[in-house]
Image (cartoon, rainbow, N blue to C red; front, side):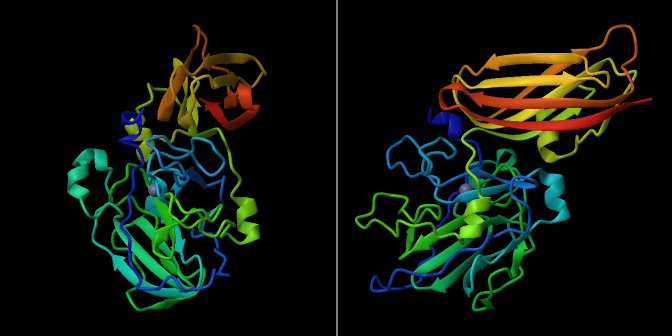
Amino acid sequence: MKKSISLIFICLTLVFTTGQTNKVKAPNILLDFPLRCTIDKDCWILAYPDLDSSEKWKDYKGGNRTYNTHKGTDFVIKNQKRMNYRVPVVAAANGKVIGTRNGVRDINVKKIGKRSVDKIECGNRVAIYHGQGLLTDYCHMLNGSIAVKKGDYVKAGDLLGYVGMSGLTETPHLHFGVQYKNKKIDPFTGKFIKNWPIQGLNRSLWKPEIKNKLKYHPAFIYNIGITSQVPNKSEIQEGNFEQQNIKNNSKFIYIWADTLSIKRGDVLSFTLKDPLGRTLINKKSVIDRPNVRRFFYLTHNRNSKNLELGKYSAKVKIYRPAKQVSYKKILDFYVVE
Ligand SMILES: [Zn+2]
């Protein structure tokens, strides 16, 4: 189980100490959304803090949307292409910048090895002290994008830089860490991430309207897409493979899905319908083993005739029978001459 999580989205953070004492009162500060993007539309929660102190892992809802020892909330964007269009990272509350790092290149750590990011796992970063013992930390930001410096005062919503993939990461995302009294805390529950002697704050640190927007999805599909060639996983994850239409003389239509946090027993279904409403693909499979991230694709092979011109609809759905939860993504595309 442990090795399955070793390569994926690992982003550790170092503790910035602020020197505050334990005598501060429970903070009344509430956090705003630390990005300028629309949650569940062009950015998603990839992983929550791990609230299990053993070698297993569990998110704040008792689910598996985390991995062992993960200490922050990961907000992911679609791919590296989107990263290059720049997604702003903003301060979650008013405060003072107490540390920054810049100059770490944006690269999939798989290509350079974990050792090369030793001690710079967080990549390009900003840390902000908000007072009342509360600190926020922003990791893996885009190289050269850090817009603040140590000692600056920032307001909630001020630009700090852009989402990147610097440090110990395989995909462009923001690792958002929260600390209270120098200890990592889960912003959804206010619980300390490790079993500290004190119980943390035991309340959400998000503003209520933000908490409402950050809906929890027990099962989740990161991305889906279509292509006329065999899907290349790494090209897709880099965003260089975003096919919009398919030529009508293409022999194949592939539907691919990049899934996260799947469990054994989950049911993954693929459906493809042509412009006449005919079902070209309708396949369900039961997941055989849990996986932090797994890539799937299915193919429709046309017969001797060209593909019907017009609008097609691809649907990928994940369903967890025991919990009655599901998550789906639908993609409409065109077959053209
Ligand atoms: Zn993270």
